[in-house]
Length: 169
Figure (cartoon, rainbow, N blue to C red):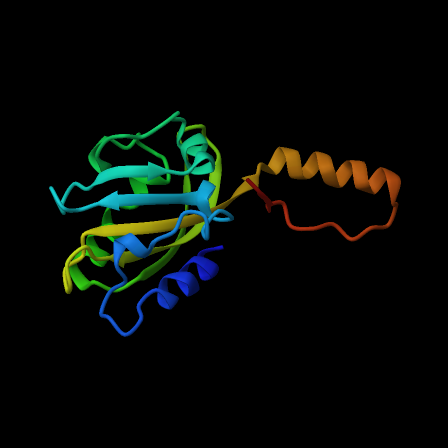
């Protein structure tokens, strides 16, 4: 998903240093929209406004909508993990890929990866950042063990897997 978004972003450059924000077409990005965020840096690049937050990303963060600033992102959510990559993109003017894992506010371990891509409203200056983030929830050891027991009961002699396994969010 982040790779598709970055390919689309690169296609909008058209020989310019940065793609124009007006060229970002939500209809073209409909498949990644639920995992997207759009930030406006025009008023405060150090604390951008969240002008769009996709439904899947909003749900993971436990919010209905997010018409606010990055500093107001709920603690221990994917949004709260974006400060450093956003700062890097706004400073360098280059897209940034990232991946990591962390324990979210619900106590669930997430493995995530994403990309943040700069856009411009004026040549040479980053005015907006579009991000796409995908994640997996890591199944608890107890759940993994229960699954292996159930499979073992159905298929005796099956080789056991490691105690941790990721499932798509």
